[in-house]
Length: 193
Ligand code: 5GP
Image (cartoon, rainbow, N blue to C red):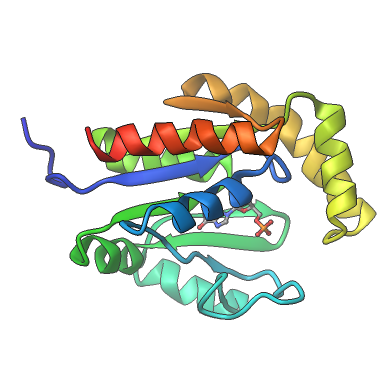
């Protein structure tokens, strides 16, 4: 039976912040030209080097709320206190119209919403570090967050790890080159199935 989304496909990378989902999604994007990332909307400030319309659409809370009211989001969420993130339906349409596979990088709640929405047209890949200690080290050494933000993200990670049982695939991000090979095989078989 053909689903309401036909043959369109969606890859959902999820897992705790600092686990490596962004790195692995970038690896996927550079190795599969038929995959394109959906650019999310956020109300957080750009980090150094981040570009509006490339990394995220950086919006004010007021403008974000206008999108909610207009029904523009497939899913949206207050991921951290005061910080909203959302997936635009227009992004999915843009990518699918180009006959490409859409890729999302979202937190675990967003991933649940996307999986519910896209169902069998999607694969949910949960990325995590081998241990919490390694996650802590990676978050601190990344140097992009304040100490308070890192502690917040670690606290959240503790709960997020319980969600891995609901994923279609779990990737343990230990040695990057090995992990990349695993992701390559996974995406290849998903795209060709
Ligand atoms: P960051 O601030 O580090 O870029 O992202 C924080 C968290 O929000 C990450 O787990 C990231 O994957 C998630 N995120 C990014 N975009 C979206 C989105 O559109 N929806 C949801 N629910 N989470 C998102």
